[in-house]
Every structure is written in structure tokens, then in C-alpha cells.
Image 1: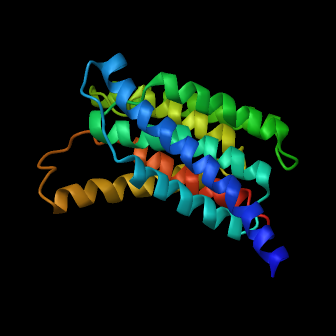
Image 2: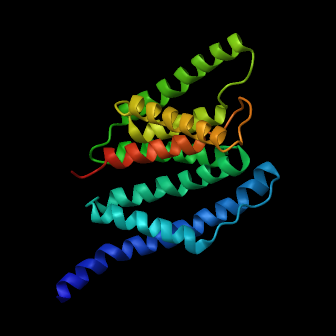
Length: 219
């Protein structure tokens, strides 16, 4: 009985610590970045709500049998991904100060993890960014109006580094589908009267999160 309790404590303690640190970092980023970089009001979300979300996520990851090292990297991914998700929804911006570290962490993740592949990460990063840049530029010239924002390109490239080249088409396909569902939902709610741009960051992050969790699943 004592051994079981000690085992549970060993599993749950890192989740508690990582959740607290992550919640603190996320709240600070949401308060600081809109003011510092976009001259917009701070985004305030309850620390307890963010901590609870991280704790539930960490608990699920631990119960699924993910190794501790993977748990740490997943928390790092969400430490940057969640603020990007919220800031894009609230402001329409995807700040480089979050996107670039997310990209570098993705390359580091592929380099350090036993199942990682640094070449796969680099190929995915390059192909995703250059491919989207070329396609979007051509469409913009044909339609003579802006299409996807370059912040979306950078975020896609950053997430692609985490996923590698194999998951790239699945990642892009799910992100596009979620973006379309978001757009249709706004139309249904009566908030999208004409064809306009919508924040694509949340769809990108949701798709990347799903495929990342699947790609590193221990089973």
C-alpha cells in the first residue's frame, strides 16, 4: 500500500510542479506580450483555470505512460502553444517572440528524443514554409488580395519541426479542416457576414497538438 502511494506520488509530483510553472509562465506571457509588442491591453485569464488545464493534461499524459522526458517537452510545447492560441484569438497576431522559440524547441526535440529525426524536422520546416509561401504568393497575385498571414506560415513551420516530414500532410490537412469548421461556425453564429480572414493559429495549434501526442505515444 505504501509502495503504491509512493509510486503515485512520484508520478503526480512532477505534473504538479510542471503545471504550476507552466500556469505562471502562461499568465505572464499573456499579460506582457500584447502590451509590449502590439500596444494592446493585457490578456488576463485566471491562474487557477490555466493551472487546472495543465494539471489535467499532464495527468492524462502520465496515465497514458509517456516517459518523463517526453512529458517535459510536451509541457514546453504547450507553454508556447497556448499563449499563441489565445493571443491570435484575442488580437489576430502571432508574435515572433513565441513562434521562434517554439521552432527551436521543435528542432531540439527531434535531435534529443530517441525516436526523433533532425533531418525530418528540417525537411518539414523548409517544405512547409517555402511551399505555403509559394502557393499563397501565387494565389495573392491571381486574386489581388491578401491570403494567409506570414505569422501563420511561421507557426506552421514551427509545429512542423516538432512533427517531422511524415506527419506534415496530416497536420496541414487537419489544420485546414479545423480552420474551415471555425469559419463555418462563425457564419452560423452570424459573426462572419462577408468573406474575411479569421485567426488560423488556433486551428494550427489544435492540429499540431493532436498529431504530436499521437506521434510520441508510447504504444
